Image (cartoon, rainbow, N blue to C red; front, side, top):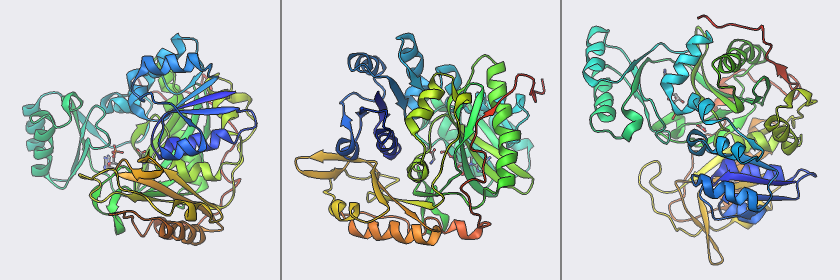
Length: 450
Ligand code: AMP
Ligand code: GLY
């Protein structure tokens, strides 16, 4: 079988690397890929947003399964285009991808499904949004651009004044273009965040092992928000009880409601969850794997990823037997370019990759890299995801940072505390404690509150 992975980040490197391990897979292509995917699989120079180009490529190469990494092509309808061309593809349709593509659509589904989430109010008019704030108490708010804004469209505001500035930035200065023409003002939730992802085929879900990302740029969760500076799995806050609650009260009602609304969800359902004092609440949904969560999660996956995704793409997830996980812990540390998450320069030569690759239980996933002659050079803000397996969190962390030490380029930096959050949580063992078998979302299982 031939597989195409769409995208060029660390998530796509991990997907391509894992898919290639399947005995059923003869070749993996990555469009457009990076220097790391060029080593492990075959890159093809088609951009991840060039939908006609991707369809043409899949047809010409007789690809059996396409796996879409990033959200932008999903929201643009890449899955619909592939299906229309008779190609097998894993990911949500354009209509279902609205769960990530429109935060107002997402809120609407959450409400219909009676899923716990932050209270929120939608606005299309700046004055009305200001007026709303005047009438409310002066407290923290979260202002969100409705559409995709490359992870930058969420502003946490300490008070009414900051909320006004965020609204102005989105609706008057149009910082995020059309994505900010509609906004949400949300109550601000407090707690630890966990990412809980599930593979879904419209009516059946298989949860993946939970991971925890580190979104702030600097140690101790300080500094600006980023795409994610590192992740570990299993997330120690995700106890078996929490997982059971999330599946029953969050994932199942969401998948069921999507189906009822005529936009059946197939693909990865990624719930960003805040563990509040009133229980888990959904912050947002993403419709693809997390980056960098995918890197440690796939390091621990023992089952054949191709078989799972192929079954899901064909609506056969129910038949799937069981997912097997390595019971060890995986930690992934993002090495970033100087200046990230703000302005940075590409083209710095990366050294030490070979030495890092020789370390046991280590895989260096490339995110923002390119080849220049014989060199691997930086080509993005988040450059590498240095990932290691260990007997426990401390062991995995030690191995990951040992590999980080081998690698250098001008201006390279990383957080030093990836996975330390685990120690604050309940330290739990895993490997068998979460449901690994498919859960079927029954027709009658209706928690819609219309
Ligand atoms: P993004 O993944 O870029 O959309 O960023 C969303 C991030 O903003 C989440 O990971 C949270 O850290 C934060 N966030 C979103 N909604 C809320 C909320 N209602 N209360 C507190 N923090 C939030
Ligand atoms: N790690 C956060 C995300 O993928 O959105």
